[in-house]
Image (cartoon, rainbow, N blue to C red; front, top):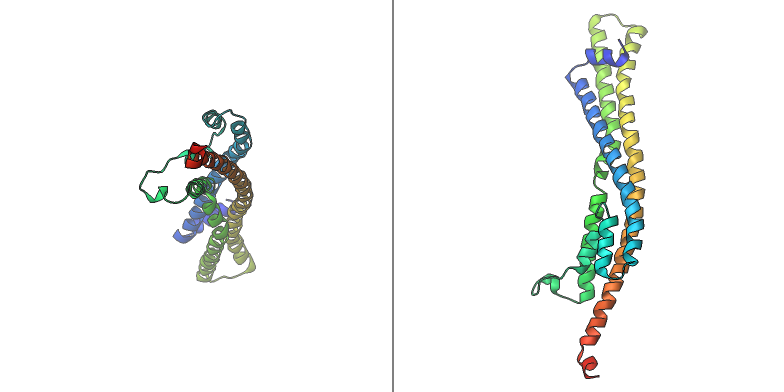
Length: 229
């Protein structure tokens, strides 16, 4: 019987509960790791190809069609839709200068997209920071449980102590095995999200400048002085 199997068979509800908790944390972390790796790979491709296709279009409508074709994870389309949205008259959204309205809508849309990209990061951070301590708890409880059993048997020797203690240390190793991939993935994904955020902010800035220039030109053409001229 292997060390872990013996540890499991000799363990009580606490040690088994800690082991199951570590297993659940590991499964959850790896699901998020595989999903976010696939998602961010697609997003990084989209934020490079989609803006180029948009700016190569002849009109905003054609550009939106290009975004629909290239923006598979819908991280750029919300920015364009927010920029083109018309707030209802008589509401606070319609108050203030049109440039301020445009900036507010783009900022809110950008925050929503970033929340989508950052989804799962909290889980990875939580697993990476707590799994070692959960494993340590299992080790401490396992050692206590093993020593209590040895003491009750009335015969204490290095052979009787080293076996149960070594088996209990498996929980510490399991906690580290769960935490290390989660921490590495959290750092890697954080860097990738930051790179995507920079691309999205650049697209939002260029979009704001284009639409703001069009609005200012429309205001000048509709002003009384322009009409009189």
